[in-house]
Amino acid sequence: MEETNRQKKIGGVLQKDLADVIQQELRNAGKTNIIISVSKVKVTTDLSIAKAYLSIFPSSQGAALLEELREIKHLLKHQVALKTKNQLRKMPDLDLFLDDSLDYIEKIDEAVKGKENPIENPNLLDKRKKS
Image (cartoon, rainbow, N blue to C red; front, side, top):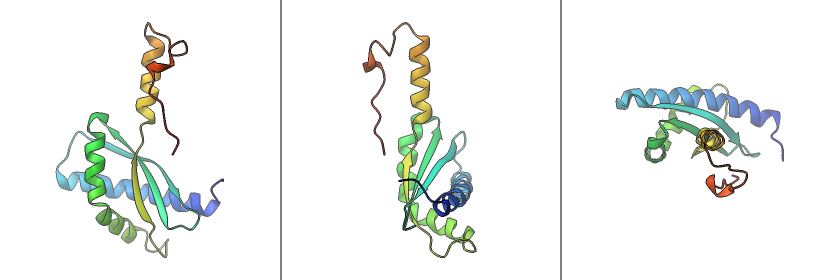
């Protein structure tokens, strides 16, 4: 089912504000040389859950940093709620996911440039799950 305009608008607002809050938390924690972007936020039809997809560079630190962010999810939700209080009546719950699309594209690019052909040998690329 396609997202409604309301879901898209709320997702866009949450995407911008969540990115600002996460960047601020990184600065406060003294973590440097890490780039996090919120690549997409999907909001459920009842506006109760927001699924945020995070792209983390360097990707080697992605899983560990995602777990840290999930531990402070309540703090992130509170900070975003303060930023969006004039635009949203109720702040949706946040679900954080790792967006690995850039890594997947990089693997495809390496496979195409390399000696082995991923079309002939599809085992070269990891299988992706639809979420």
